[in-house]
Image (cartoon, rainbow, N blue to C red; front, side, top):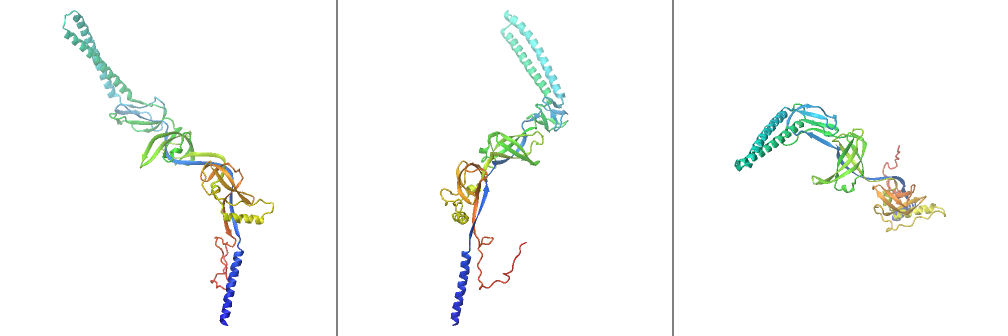
Length: 421
């Protein structure tokens, strides 16, 4: 009798658990949430970045071609100079001495020429009358020609020393500003093997340039005339504009990395940019303004068939007989989830009212966040970017709530309520 009662009690417990589970499952309702985005106008730009150095368009290093002591300096750092302006002067004393010495050599050579010319004239008359030997006349001719050559050599030395004396005064070859002064008064400069640099002059700091190093993987996207924006550390919140003026073909190799030098013009009307500053340049490879944009998520989105069916069923249950019919089932071949490339036909899902349907479109350029819409959509349309489904009996974390049996023991404190403020 007791066993019979136990069997009956166990059966009742199982029936109660099954009934509660059936109620829980039968009362579960699947909900579908759809996330959409509106088609808007905007800008697409693809860029590459590089670093470079600001330089003056034309920089001249002024040196000296003669050795000597700097006697006077007439300019200093940041001095504005004009073409032909005197910058410095060397001590002219040794150069004047060399010039006077060469002048004396010229005078001596001219006297020698006069003497040999007179001898030559006499011997020429005597040789015509056969009064002297031919060898004596030939010697007179030789001495006369030798004296002429000596005079020519003496004159060239004199001219050279005269030019060297003019080199003692150093003039500016261009209009510009003194960037560097490498000498002081009283300093000795030697021009034996190479020309020492005394001054560095930049012609015009209102027009500068940036020499940027572009990686070989990006150089194919750079073109002459391309718009460039750059910043410098001195003014981090300010952007300066320029454009590509030259792409140099000579590669630069450093640590097995190949780069190419690209020259960017950098207008500097305020003269706040300085030579040597590091520029962080952004090259605008693709730039389309005021175009119709569709999110890339919408182009790559393909709804799950089960979620779409659930969504259509929910619409069918609430729609009136005259409402728009649900969207057709998904054709996996036609609407495969694949990345779009410029100028290709793609498919997005458009939400009109409560219904969604596939819409073929043609896309153009992209920045991987948005695509340009060439056809198929207009501004203000609403496209689906994601769709997710969940059961009404699920918790906030998406896990179904467990059905509780009245016969199962409960953990102490499980009935405690938590209040969220």
